[in-house]
Length: 253
Image (cartoon, rainbow, N blue to C red; front, top):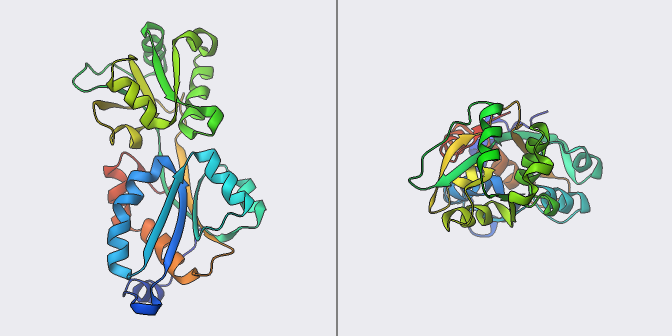
């Protein structure tokens, strides 16, 4: 169930906090939404007078910290998150869908953009590559977990092992690509478009790569509930939707 602020409450929250009323809101989220959130924070801070301290990590690592009860006012987690809900550390009724992001293919800047419109086209591309890179699933990287599933669906898990250079995060995979150490890089589209020396070809087909959906919650332990609710509302607003689109994501569910 999506947590809805009343229009009166939202207007009050965005009316600006001053002096002793201003608070710091802590947020934790996966790296796939980093660029979008970082772009929105200054405008939110300007409108409310509050500040936001954002911490980003892997998708799996973020969920683990929320489940453990690490103190954050607004956790953003990827589905499935039954363990987060069962932990008791989030307000279930506050669940708010923000955006989803797909794993995409990256090439070096200026390189030809191959066809990835079908599963067969992606399989042919991978079989013809010398080396590829993507984030380390073993460290909880959601893009890495997703791409492992893609290789499994394509029947290429074993065949591709000698060609894979596992990277630390999406940025790590893109750095290898930019330096010419690999032929293709794979990570969330939102992470490709922020990195120098590489270009996004586009998202992988949905029949072999399910998008990752991200939702925000109000922490059950927050001491800044009203400010945190205002931040969640802002991150799910029409203004936020435009930012998500510009950052290679799709807003909402």
